[in-house]
Image (cartoon, rainbow, N blue to C red; front, side):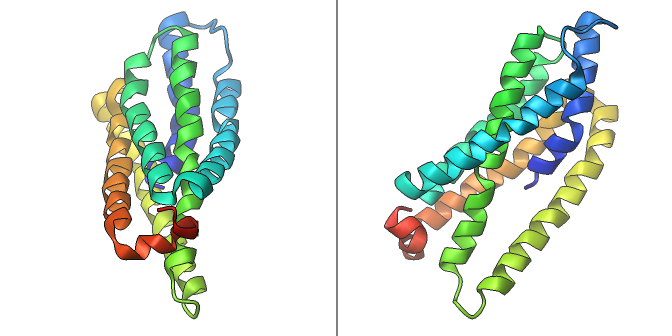
Length: 184
């Protein structure tokens, strides 16, 4: 969740700054509408993430989604000030991938937790996730002030990178056979 809510919180400001850098006061697309489109496409990612995770494996799909999301954290800055189609292409891919892993974490916790602790473990996982987002959301203005929009979202790539490492470590554990009916 490190990058998810920070992206959602700051994508409109990023798009507005990017469009203004390229088009001045007359961008071809309103930044607020563009941000809505980016966030709304996440519904596709959430659906596809669950569908593929149940068929291909939870750790595999979660890792793939985080790799794409992390790559978008890095790539979106290079699109800053570029043509609206390029900025939106990267932003929409990010919008789809940034959410595709979220439900997989909860499903993994539910599948791997002892029956008597499942609710508590899901509560703990959700609480830690939201606490992380408070940090990343609040750090973004300082990062933008320090390095500008071109590199600001790069700071969010650390979350997916660590998440991929954690999911691949989980994949190697025998307990991972409990995930997605044996599809790690």
